Length: 330
Ligand code: CUA
Image (cartoon, rainbow, N blue to C red; front, top):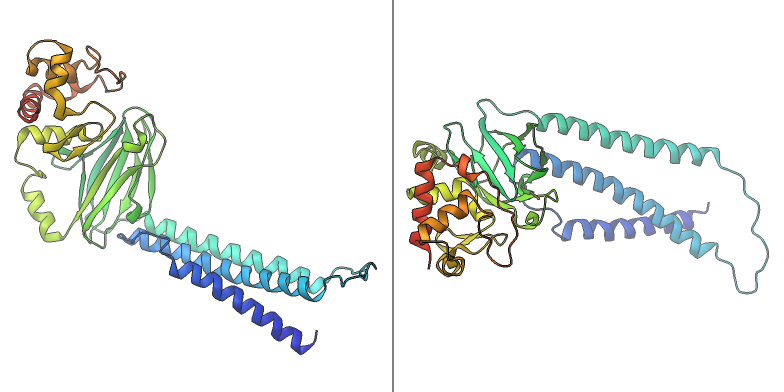
């Protein structure tokens, strides 16, 4: 090959590499990596992307060069010269991709294994998925509809489900883990940033799947110590605490609780709904709707609410929840 052709090929490759590198770097493809595991996963993404850019540049350069140099001139109907294989080239295009793919698998395997390891003294949280809410239970026995974890220390999530398969995902923490009934899956997260990030159900689990969302609060070690000292409560209102612990906001809207679920009836309108239902005083109606949700269905809604809250919520807490809902109904 003439020297001029080699220079043209190299230039074409550099142009293709520059364009793809710009597309990779200038567009923010990935969310902030708020955890050590997420940073490692991002590294695998970039490692693979760099290899892909290299391969693309070579292919694009050769393809453009061939199409340009060896195109049929007008009026040229002759066949091209017969060409046999090129052993050197064949060895190269077999060996190089094999080495690159092996490199990607080794890097991935190392990072997968590192991501399974927690730092010393990890914090443990039990995560339960249920149509259509998350419940997080802490070592002291308290539960909440949102997750609170410390920065700079690993948290081990023990993830399971009460009904169908859900999947736990915080985009900024990168990993996903299925919540499967009868099975306990483990996920290690080690936050490197404080902040509030969304918790998303990323497995189609029913009508309310898209709304099965919560959030994770990553607290600094000092704030986390305060939160722990406060018994893991984010509110001093006992009724609101029961509301949050049972994930009611995953399905219902209630302004007072900052909840905006859309699966079940809007709890701000409880008074109107009770009048329509005509099933006795407001408090009795609210209690019946929690314990035996199918007794009366608000028009436009189906029998979707779990029938288990009556057994799940202790009687005293149930009364606190009913009082809270009655007090906040408009
Ligand atoms: Cu739970 Cu989708």
